[in-house]
Length: 73
Image (cartoon, rainbow, N blue to C red; front, side, top):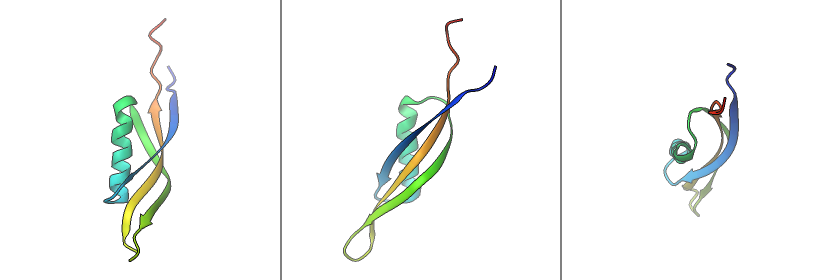
């Protein structure tokens, strides 16, 4: 049978790094979404303090997962 996938767009942030923001979004998504197969970074942005030091890293991801087969025949 042909594999069907679905993509959703989610955003999140971390005070530590872009990579940590990505990991945070994926970990939270995995709580309710099974069979995540890939992600794409759509947008990266952040906040800085008065000295120009980054204080928050934010990302928007497209997360793709496999749609389960129907349990009804």
